[in-house]
Image 1: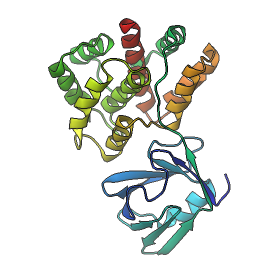
Image 2: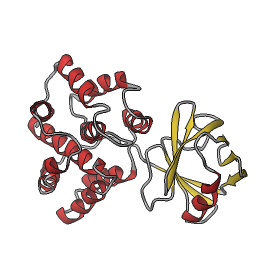
Image 3: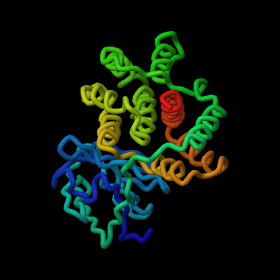
Image 4: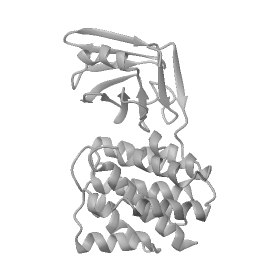
Length: 276
């Protein structure tokens, strides 16, 4: 990627999508988050990964702005530029080109042979042993319900209240599991995806800022790039080995986020196969 170029999620399309002024929310080795009118924008130099609410910078550009980025610093944004105000000085960054990357899910017709192949791949990963959630009776009860969902608003609400915010990290395990599950339901337009969405809309502020922004983007139909690559692979009906590589890319996310999300995928495809 050229130094003066960037890639941006179609969920944002411009740097000032949420507003002209913001602050540095959190800073990490290869990424940072801006908070703009209660929404996050992720700036990252982490390989090919693009967050659903993200902007991908070249590594030299990220390292150039990193010394000016401390939590709480004010940031001013335009469509193609940002200015960071810090104690060590003012840093201006303008882009000659920002490539919009489509990260909207879009529905596809289920090819049950491909869906079955995905379930087989997920089964080989022994995901239950890798979850960031306990494997108690309550979890197993909810896992059973997600595999065989029914129209019961009280059960859906209780399930969402239990999982949202449960677990450690920037994206708690319960959130990651539900996001993997909802991704499959939305992708294949399962009859209960809107029921789950309705309950998730009630969960604002019951989890971390980062996780809620991922959930908010998903509710509007946007996911991070590894999930879009899986979505495209499923639509193209890729062979086993190629589909397996796409699953491995999701598994590699975070400490347990990938495993939790993939278990959500597994529960989702099981529900889909039962529905068919």
